[in-house]
Image (cartoon, rainbow, N blue to C red; front, side, top):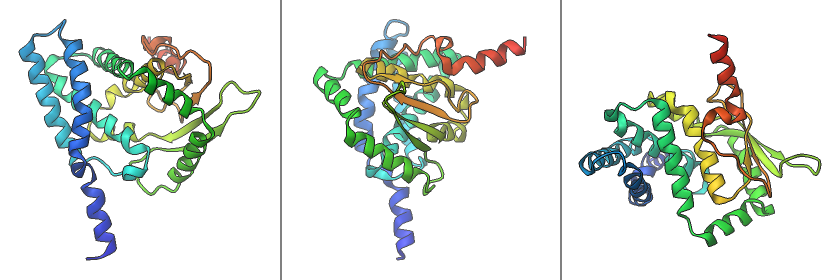
Amino acid sequence: MSKEFEKFEETKGYYIGNKKKIIKQFNSLVKIVEVLFSSNFDKDLIKNITKQAYKELEILLSRLPYVGGDKSPFTSLMIQSAETIAFYKACKSLNLSEREFGKIMYDIAENYARSISPVKKWLYRKAIFSKKMKKYWKNWMLESQNLNYPENWVGNFKEGEKNKFFNYGFDFTECGCLKLLEKEGVNEIAPYVCLCDYARMRALGVGFKRTKTIAAGAEICDFRFIKEYQTPKGWPPEDLEENMSILEKSQDNI
């Protein structure tokens, strides 16, 4: 058996091989969904939706693109993207608008981040602004530019300066989540999926800012991490600078 074939088999089966671990993580999200849905839907409907979500996730795992496995930080982002798509497909029977589903996903992300223990939040905040973390992301941004995985994120590391507003950040020129959404035929929810970044960072107490996204029609997604900065709420989306281009386009069409 050639090394090339062995590598192909390894990447092809990565998510299936880690199915148990991924489902365990998904269980935590399902519990939050059950609580959030309990005020609007009956128990049987919630049970059917979550059951379908598990089915959709298992289907996705069999075709989810490999982006580097355990060593890559983009792998967890790809799994998160798959989880979102699984819920969206499972919720189709509810006839929700993209905006209504977007609000649900935002609330899920916010509540999930809030459920993390204060100690873990503190450690996360301390780590994200450390020299070690900055070096880690700088190396992975450089690695992404090698284009080893077509479905991956690709970006440039941006070093903060004393006279700049941010400590460091990334300019993503390609988004793995958006690629997956388009591949699965659900790219209509892309702008709302992006909002989950605000929900997570705000709940964790991490300063985060973004002025544009590829999903909203920009050429890049400019992620910026800022010490001692209050991350704005991601909902409603119209209040965010990154969505101004969408509003301007809609007004031009009136």
